[in-house]
Image 1 (spheres, rainbow, N blue to C red):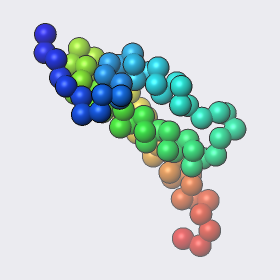
Image 2 (cartoon, helix red, strand yellow; image 1 turned 180 degrees about the vertical axis):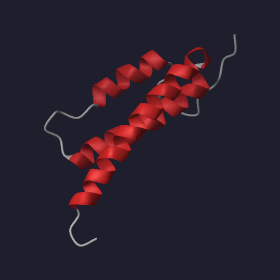
Image 3 (tube, rainbow, N blue to C red; image 1 turned 135 degrees about the horizontal axis):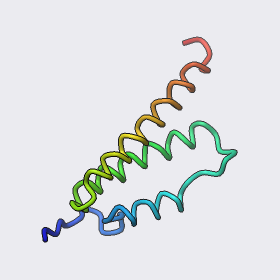
Image 4 (tube, rainbow, N blue to C red; image 1 turned 120 degrees about the horizontal axis):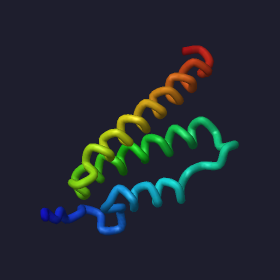
Length: 86
């Protein structure tokens, strides 16, 4: 078994910890688009880190990072579409 040291000891180290942390910080349904964008961007970062710290779940963490990145890109596109004068 390979153990990887984390650069931030408070950050989630396993896929299950990542899921738990992201559920805890998830915005409410009525949150702004910018709040959701920040959340999904954070999710991508968390799951990308998990690919390094939880090798047994690397593939799943990559899936989740890809999924959350797509959601962030969708929201960013909607925000840009609504921006006046660009």
